[in-house]
Image (cartoon, rainbow, N blue to C red):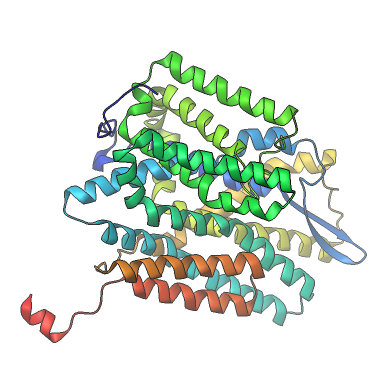
Length: 431
């Protein structure tokens, strides 16, 4: 990258209220891509033994090109870094410290999560009471929990953002290089030892590196590069991916590279970020058009609600599809058959519409203002740890009625810890 002063200012926002239209449109497209990708992976069949729910992408060739088009998580974290850095710098200018900033982020992330997980536990209880086989209830809980990894990792990234942004402002290249190098070391250790569990260390290093890349975008450093330099970054990243695929270092299925995360995602993030910068102008102009503007205005205040609720919606639609097939005795097309592909446009339209309707009705939860932030780093740090522990428990143990209740209790504790203490009579008198 070219030498730019560490405190270079971000590109001027292009929307009222200080928002960046290109970033908001990219975020809206990313969240839409996540819903589409997960919807494509839903497979429903009915056999003599009853309904069966499978991952429709298992053993198929189409998941590879689809993952190249829709694996947007690296860009999601880059956008998170851009937005977080921009928001924190504005808050810092108003006198808000890092503790207060992180407390607000915890509230924005965990309050809608508490509602979603509580509702999921209630739905699982209703399924069990209705006599749904226990293995299907367990599978539903497992599928619900799978996308929650993003919530846990994003919470950690945002909790560390003030400290990492200060480090970026002092040593931008060294800070991101250290994270990328740590991710590469983890990959090498996993590949040489065969211990897949080592790869989960990259839940920190890979995604923190992508957030750090977002800081460069917020500084204006990437946009300051020549178009030729940015194009070379894209070409180099894609070439690195091609080499890693052909040499067997990484799977060409980018979905497989997310669990655990691999350094292939770093290359994807670099390519996506450089492409975003190259096409930032056209994206800004596109964002002003009616349909893209409507998508952005819908998704921006509801991004976390859409993410948290899209899987329950997909599971509900899959269950209704199976129930309708059982009641009507109408056969369902075999997964990956020609008939199945013909039904995908309708299925995707239904999935996106249903997710949008649910998000519209539940978005007020995400919009609730955060209470007075605690001025205790210990309280806010505890909140981040407890919130992350709640998500980790669901990922490891799966979601059941019991684990959902425990998670709700932990999330409630985290939210209480992150808020300021209630004003006492003495504080009111001194105010």
